[in-house]
Image (cartoon, rainbow over all chains, first blue to last red; front, side, top):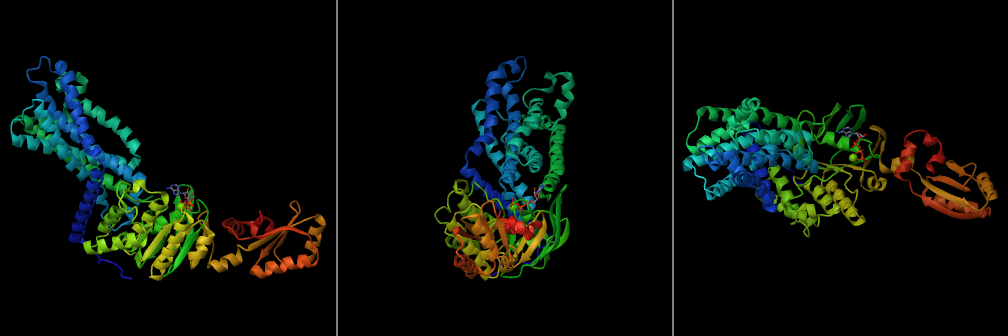
Length: 266
Length: 313
Ligand SMILES: Nc1ncnc2c1ncn2[C@@H]1O[C@H](COP(=O)(O)OP(=O)(O)OP(=O)(O)O)[C@@H](O)[C@H]1O
Ligand SMILES: [Mg+2]
């Protein structure tokens, strides 16, 4: 019998191996997405939903009296929300893998265990880019105007980056909970308050005073403000620093944590 | 290979001091009832669970110290299928082959071979979520073979399979062992261990209760039992007198039945029946009961070995 027994790998080879594993996991994800095109639909449905609903249903009320057109305010916030929603798929996907047991095989394979999660979060980031481009198209059709094309691209990239940070948080929760339906329930608890008490849909000064400090500095708000700045060509550097800071912070905490929880043996 | 393995989950001692060695081309059958600790042993050896105490090595690599090296030489088909339900069998195998870093030409050839050899062509290209239980099981076992492992772990590989699929798995295990693979197989079926294993390790409540070859184990603990039902009480009494000198006889007056532990095969059974027949003892019925796992366990765990009545329960 011919035995495949690769020689010991160290350092650089180990890194390229991790890269190959991530590429493999991304390949797996493309097949899964192709098999369930509804995954792509889910990636944009929330964005479309908020865009249409808030603009046509609440737009009149919320925008009334403001000097700017509400759609101009809304679209950047919707980008951030769309990216966040898309990032939830990492969480669900990992929980499904854990529940179905395929992670047991991954853990018995000579592969980078980081790739199991990184493959997912990166796949979500790519899906988010596509989803955000679609939402941007819809916004344009609805009459939204970007300040510049560069600004639009930068805005979409920043929203995707923030979503990427959050998908590691989702992965950590999934690695702990392991049940897709529980993960879905839990996301209602942290994601919705964070989404609604943010500057994604309304400016902070329209909120009750006690809520304003939170609503100004929480990650979804600073991300919305920064993305809005990029879209409008009126970027406040402070917003950008905060948004990037939050993203880096999320990654720094939840990337190692999710991998620790995932690789923890019982 | 494994030395004094132990594992506890909180208060539950899942595995307690289990040791064994499996050589190349050898099949070890790990036998035990539900909750015995079989899966826990497999999970510890395949790096999925940590080892609380004791040690294990596979192909010279220590399981706790160098899990990566171990993962390169093992194949695992766990108790429940571990495949991607959305992917087809071919795609699943491709996925695992890529993760083993097999080069593309090797990958292609290997996967085509496996699909052909295990007769999966018919369903290889539709998603695993559409498979029958047996088909999924087969994919799971084949997935463990992608990188031609030196050591193969099969946790209850035939549970839930129909007789034909079971026979196919048995054939596969035999030929893999012939090719030099060391195999650890857990099962609840004595006949399966009997068919496949060179060595059997019986565990119960995490402890080793017996080890040996299938032959020695059956000889020692799970004898064939000849159950002879007699027509009347008188017949029972004469049978008892007649066979008083024999070992392993137990009487069940309520059912008017006499049970013999048979060690000498068919010949001994015939001999017993012939002696009863010669003395004109009226036999209403008889049957030869092969040892079941139940018998082995009752015999191995506790006083039942000294109380043959228990064996004929
Ligand atoms: N993660 C866990 N947490 C707590 N207890 C566990 C865990 N895994 C296994 N156990 C316990 O350890 C014991 C051995 O379980 P194990 O799964 O190894 O049995 P088994 O021999 O494979 O049984 P079966 O034939 O039912 O598959 C059982 O009492 C089980 O409840
Ligand atoms: Mg088990």
